Length: 267
Length: 273
Image (cartoon, rainbow over all chains, first blue to last red; front, top):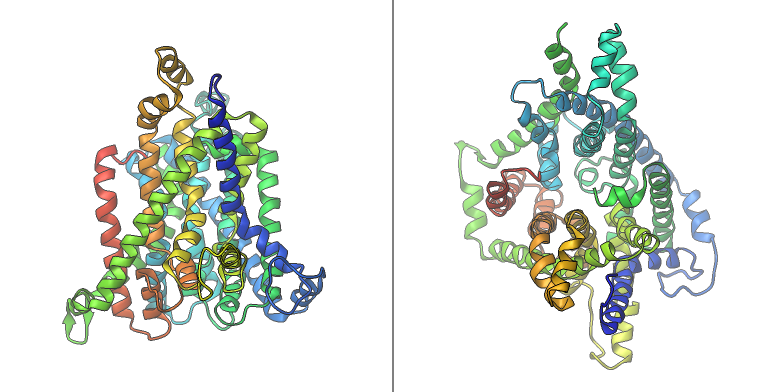
C-alpha cells in the first residue's frame, strides 16, 4: 500500500479481505467438505472421513453418462469456437470488410444478451423447425456464447502484433495461405489458447442452455447436479461438484502458467 | 482472390453460425410472443401486465437485482482497490480468489449455499447459538438467501470490471492529492472514485443484467414460492408449457434490460461493449 496509510485502515483492509475471502470461497470449501463426509446426510462440518461418495459417483451410470456427454460437448465447443472465433477475429482485425467497425459489435453481441433469452429462442426455433434437440444443437448454442470470448482474446493479442510482418512475408513471395498460416496464426496463438480454455470452461459449466435444451439422452453434468439438488441431494452431489472444482483449478493453473493470471484478470 | 474475399471467407463461418443459431432463434421467439390462435395478438403481454401476481414477480426481480448490484459495488470497489495496492504475491492470490468462483459452475456454488443456509446449516445454527434469532428462524426459501447467493455469484464480475479501470489510473495522481494535503479517505473519494466511475458503471450494468436474468440460484435458494422473472419463464417452458407466454415474458425481460443498458451505450458510444 501507499505509505502513510493509517494503521487502523490497514487493519480494516485485512478484516475486509478476510470477510470477502469467506464470502467468495465458503460455498466451495463447504462442497469439498461435504464430499468427504462419512454420514448419509449432507452435513457441514463433515462427520467422519471417507471417500465412499466418490466411489459411488464413479460407479453411477447417471453421473458417468452425464460427465461423458459434458466432456464431448465441451471438446466440440472448444474446437468450433476457437476455429470460428479465431478466423473471425483475424478478419475483424484487418478492418478491410465493409462497415468494419460494426463487425466486432456483431461478434460480441451474444455476450450482452442474457442466456435465458437466447436459450428459450433456441429451444422454440429448433423444436418448431427440426423437432427434438440433439447434442450437436446444444454444442452449437454453447459455441455461440463462447465465441465472443475467443474473438475478444484473439483481438487483444492481434492489437499488439506487428502489422508489417504480413507485408514483409508478401514482399518475400508468400502466398495468401502461407501468410495466414505461417505469419498471422502463430501471432494469434496466446489469444487462441486463452479463448479455447474459456470456451471449454463455459461449455462444461453451463447450466441454462443445457437445462432448456435437455432431453432424455441429453443431460450434461450441471443439469444432472441441478436435478439432484431440486429433488434429493445426497453427498454424492458434493463429490461430483468437487471433481468439477478440481477441473476448474487445473484450468486456472494452466492459464496462469501459459499467460499469467494477473495480467489476464486486469485486461 | 483479393483481400476482401479472403477476409469474407474468414468471417463467413462465424456469420453463418450467428445468423442461423443466434439471430434466427431470437427472431422466432419474438414472433412467438405475439402469436395467437387467430393471427398476431398482444394477449400474452396483457395477461402478464394485468396480473398482480406477475407484476409482483417483476417488481421482486427489479428490487432484488438492484439490491444485489448495490452490495456487489460496495464490496467490489474496495476489493479491486486493495488489489491494485498490494504486492504481486498477494495480488495473485486475490486474483485466484476472485477467478476460482467465477469459473466454477453456478450450480456447484449454489449447492454450497444450500448446505450453509439450510435449517441445520452452519449459518442459521450459529445465529441461533448466539441467540440472535428465534428457534424457528430459517434462511432457505427467503429473499435473503437469494441475495447472499447472487452476490457471491456476481461479485467477481463487478470486481474485475472495476479492476480493469483502476489498473490504468496513474498512481501519481493519488500521490499528488496526498502531497497537497488530502487525507487517505479524501483521496479515495475525490480522485480514485471519480476515475473508477466507468468501471463501476459497467460492472453495475453487468451485475444488474445477469442478476435479472438468472434463475438457477433464485430457484434453488428461493424455492417455488419466491419467484423471479427468469424462474417464471423457466416454469412456463417446463412445468406448465405455454411457450407463447414464456416468449412474451422473455421479451419483457429483454426490453427491461435494454431500457437499463441504452442510456449507457449512448453515453459511451458503445465503446466498452
